[in-house]
Length: 301
Image 1 (tube, one colour):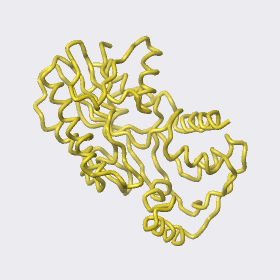
Image 2 (cartoon, rainbow, N blue to C red; image 1 turned 180 degrees about the vertical axis):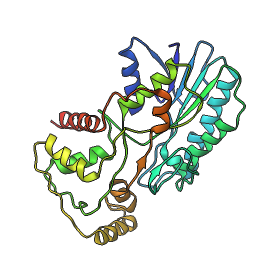
Image 3 (cartoon, rainbow, N blue to C red; image 1 turned 30 degrees about the vertical axis):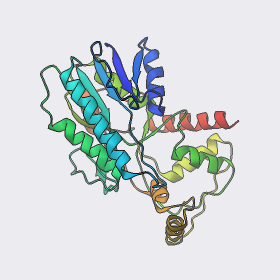
């Protein structure tokens, strides 16, 4: 494994990736997208492009920012990669570049149809990478992770933990769903496999844990790990959806987008990736979720 440049090293995934590689005696070099100058790539063997503008659930961001950060800066870094002696470029995209709503199970072969500026900007970056002629000896990997979680994560799982661990009833139990998650350790494992091996072909790969879980199962796991009895209330879904619409209008905590994040079905296949790696992911889905929950409990105590 040669020298690795990582953009977004100070973010959630970047911090975990740095720690993960340190366990194998490997240091990584960080690169900030805020720099007006592209990095020196002369002694770099692999680039992991993590940095980007995350999806804004409050919808207050300027849409242009998504394209400036997620597309234009990716384009510039990938162009520099093509002109350099760097061998591998790993772009961390998102399943949202493919679909916001999933019917059945999402596959890499599905026709992309993103509905948000976040998803559209990620897809634009993917399409630029795929449209360029790849010189001999170089490889690109577009990874589409689903919802990433792990110790230190401050996303929706943390919000759900804060809700349930205080004994507040979970009012969305009437919604039946299944969704895919991704332990950050599994993502780090995949990135390491790609960097270390020469037998993984360039392309687009979805990254997800092997097992999907329902939100009701998450609530029960949080209750168990918090040593509280999870209280699941089955309130009419139509009433909840009406309240979410009011949240959209009056900027309340529960919005339609947040509701969908919690109760939608979003199943992501990782079979293509598993077929090429030919190894089991190191962390089982439930194990990873429990590790994340325990980190929330530790930080809140």
